Picture 1: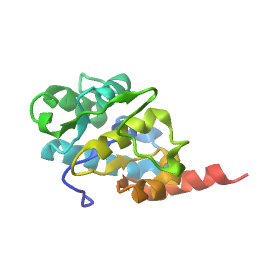
Picture 2: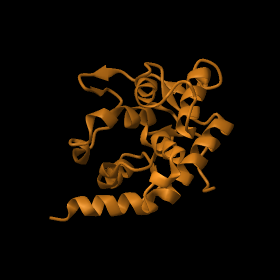
Picture 3: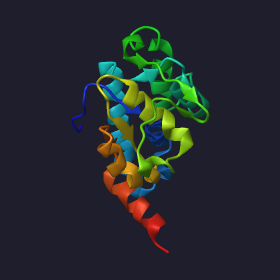
Picture 4: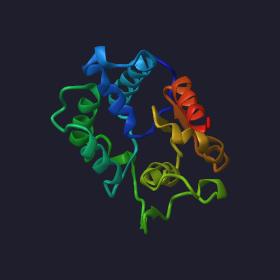
Length: 177
């Protein structure tokens, strides 16, 4: 497994990508390694209690809407159950407060190149920015993030692409006429 920091903010597509392992024959060849890497990340985060959340449940609610709280059938669903079972125990010290401001958050960083950043993903940057350790955001397959990576780094936050080759290729494909 790759080396990762102590704490992370995790975009929902990481556990969703891990869940693709439930039907291996339906995973595109270009995503096979990415699915395995997402499973490794999920297992690492669970073993190290390394997830950072917000006290307002913005991230939790997104996870709950897209993953199964039963913990089945995939590793992303297992992650969801673990988050549910531990957010008021093991994970409580890893939670930060973020304040809603329209369709964004007061803690969302200011940068001219982030003005068009997807509003539904503001919560992830806001949580990272609000945390004293500025934990990196783990991103798997959403190629929009690739176009904002420089601006994110310029504001002092970090994004770790679990599947960098895949996401770079998808981003470049979107740029082609």
